[in-house]
Length: 345
Length: 255
Image 1: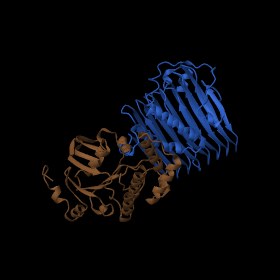
Image 2: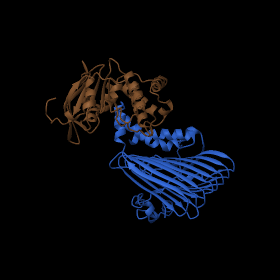
Image 3: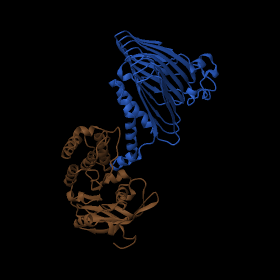
Image 4: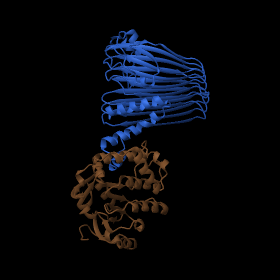
């Protein structure tokens, strides 16, 4: 059961619904009453993507068509922009991309979801495999349209000593889910799985992650932050499973959201499932408003209310941006935050 | 003209009256102390003058240089020259002290129609003022007040006051939580800012601070109004005799 299967078979009963425990906050069956026609091939020139300033190699997937594979040979290094673009109004499409990062290789994957049109229903499935000692930095910017439906599902398989550092930045969509599954072998492999949602109006974003530790000596560190305004809805579901025998696992998960409106909603479900011994695990989950004391303090010093709110909100999300290692991507992420907050707060 | 003039100020918090008609005048260049027992309304006075939400002025007036403070937003009062050194300075996570202070300074400059301060000029100014207060410059790169000790927070308040250069500085229990060395540094910082065009309102429970910051006048605040005023010796009297004779005075009795 998935959006991809529903699009490919035309069978609406394949859509995940609120009856499915993992989709209860991101109901697609109740929302998509009829699937749009399959998206046509693209005939327009693409505008620059969000990472264009970094001059990366481009791998484009437009309306479900285009690049299907990204590979980095053993020991090599690449910076690749992987763009999922929807250019058709009211079209449905599925894209599948497999990514291979060879032994000791490194990939900076600058991934974007871009959709300006209305009514599209898009699904992307990524299958990512890292060889021993490989490093993947994945920075995702999701700029979907307020009237789009978009689901991205990534499956990441790590090997010994490999590392995945991921930061997902999203402004939501009519309904949107960015889901990542990580198979974690332990064996010195390291995972950082961060995210940030900045949502206004009636936008919806769902950041869901599942990390399964199966071997000894693995680490996962996760920091998700969100800002919701208007009638927006932010969803975070994070599950870290420490399987039997995955001893000496270190897992940390934090989800912290700022709600700027009484009508906005945040649903958080952090889960740690621990079946091993000698593990260090911690999680925190908070939702709150801007600190009124801090706001008054700033205003007492002469900072106007709007500027003070923006400063405190930006400071709240900055931690996620600061953790991005790639300098150029971090700068782009910071600009993205300023731009999105300007339209949200 | 009086720099600060407070007339019959009545303030309620959560609909509960706290100040019952407080009057106070501070000429330019003078330092006045307001002393009083716990619960007298000392912090309420400072918050009401600074414009803290929730401190509802039900009657009376407060003017700075003749301008009605009570009609202004907190940030407008700040740009006019009102500075409050908080009893418990708030932590501002994620905003380095330098960034915060520069944002505040430039916001005040813009509000007054003055040019913004350039980054090099700002850094020069802050470096000099921080050194005088024995604040390591690296501390200014940390988020404001986050993880700072009580003494560090109070020194940071005085640094902000020094950089923002207000007309009226309200020091709310600036001595609380300070050991004797920190108290001396803070008091020296405050004394360095005394000037003929600047007034200070020093709010304190204990006389100790006034050994270091010598006031021109001392007022006793009890049960929501000023019940006695006098010279610096009044502070010594209070230290010796306590507040009992003021605190026990029934509401409405003449001061």
